[in-house]
Length: 158
Image 1: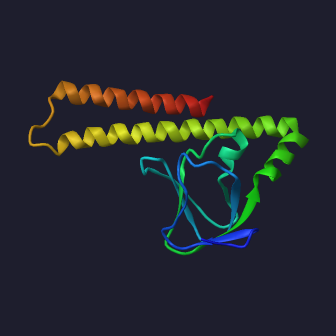
Image 2: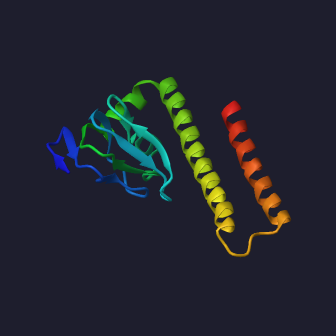
Image 3: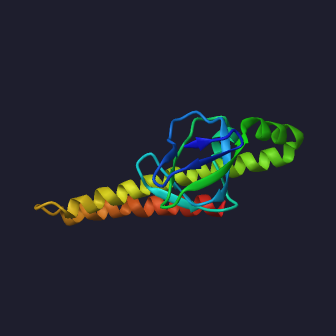
């Protein structure tokens, strides 16, 4: 990474931050793309020019919950310090509450997506064995997946 204090440049494939890291700034993409992934490697989103990433951990005052990784071309981003978000939150209580609620929903959605992907992966792994699972085992796993999907739908509807 090249850093001049106000902006940073990362090379293709470079990890910007990992889930669990402490957050001191967010980023506004000026050029390039970044993949947002769960700690298990599930791609949640691809962000590009004009989009912000890394703000959730700052707004909720928690460690990074996802990993940000540069895509196939270099990434140029303006750094947005934690102090910028702190001022914004203090200056508008209503906006702060709205943003916080949205960020909490985003975290929950990311968690549910990761759980569903892991469950699907486990189910598919059973087909790779020489001893295929019994019908009732598959039906039970599919029931769990349907339950998770319904939970996600209910979250979205609320």
